[in-house]
Image 1: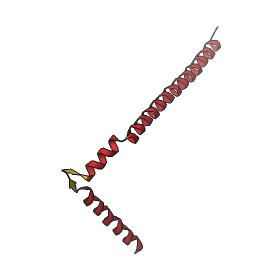
Image 2: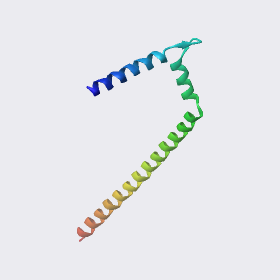
Image 3: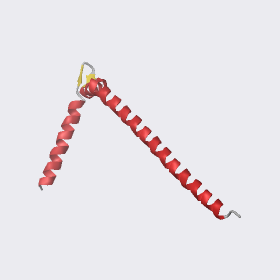
Image 4: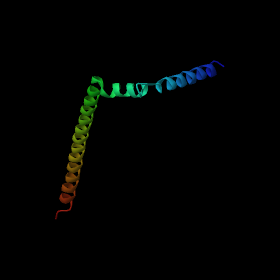
Length: 90
């Protein structure tokens, strides 16, 4: 029964929050004001730069590991070819 009360309280809270966010002052809703604040804040720009740096780091790591794996595979293939050529020499 406690779980049902918790779910109902969360539902009521979500409905009240939704109703509050749709209130307009000066022709603009609170939801729009909050969204503009979050998008245009200094923290948002900092987080965007940090995310872009993370993407660059992941891309560089992926390219480096791909090159390393490719080099290892080429070396193994070359060694097998040389071994087979030596075995088949007459």
